[in-house]
Image (cartoon, rainbow, N blue to C red; front, side, top):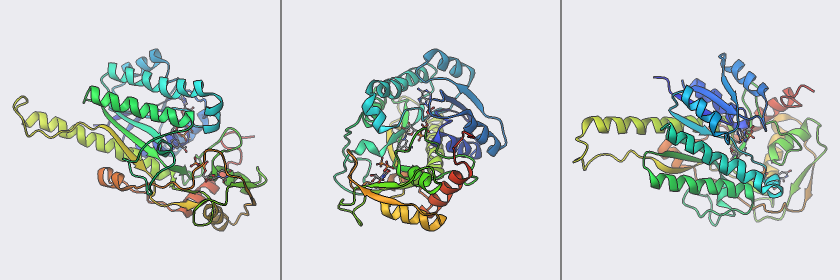
Length: 363
Ligand code: NAD
Ligand code: UDP
């Protein structure tokens, strides 16, 4: 039977790539997005790429009434919840907007899911919940702490999901902690389309290469790293999308186990029943490898043959020296690991950027 998935925020950067991966894996999808940080054009292009129409609903996850209509009209196996605001600097300036959107929005979604007994969720969390890590690589049991409202909003939702799992073991709440998503679909048709000047490194590099920005500022060259510049774990967005499919497949396996278990055992006296409840399950999605800013800039220039002028600048407030994942849990539980290299990330970013110098906006 084809399982249907509600994809909140499915018009966005990671969501649009995940819609393709879901379709390819045989899932039915309904996209729900208020388009605050995306455009219909992304949905149109996904539909072209999969050669099938996409059911798209323009709506806000804080709108319980509209969500109820969507749940009443469809029988979902689960929800992938990408919808959220993600700019750290903006969250410092507008904390209420971030808590309202990211935390209240998630609570509203969970309430509606509970009403309709849809209790499988894949939530977009972030490596930012680890703050400045004490040890590297970072595994899922590392301490969590955040210093900005965006990170706090992710951490708050994680705590809500943990409490929810304790309250009722029907909930299956896979929480994917992404490291640094970059890259674009191999077609060059969809990719990351920042509204303003990018804050993140890879889109900044590609906009310098295409001539939209003059020069990259490298924030800090005195970190205790291989060359003094910050180290991060870059993960291709197509690998990340595959991680969501793997998470759903894991939830389906657990649901099948639960069904078989019920069918083959006398319910009350069954002491050997397998515990199939997933509960709150945090999983890192990263490559497990760290790359410095200078390494990424050099790789980008080499593989694209574009020059990327840069200058060193002071450290950016709130930045940490190094951050990279232990990806062992994703491998063990989801049988997922990153396949694509830094070269792929640079080639695919550049294809998207050079084919769409203004993103989804034609002018
Ligand atoms: P994005 O901004 O491209 O996508 C988010 C989508 O959610 C957008 O299409 C936006 O219009 C939509 N949205 C926002 N608020 C909404 C609301 N209240 N109701 C309905 N739709 C709403 O961002 P992305 O990079 O694709 O990130 C997806 C998720 O992953 C976000 O939750 C983000 O915080 C998280 N995340 C992203 C990164 C990253 O570097 N891109 C890293 C870690 C975690
Ligand atoms: N960075 C940089 N110049 C930029 C943007 C980012 O030197 O214009 C550095 C940043 O200091 C960090 C790395 O690139 O060491 C990744 O930054 P990004 O904002 O992409 O991710 P995050 O810091 O959230 O992990």
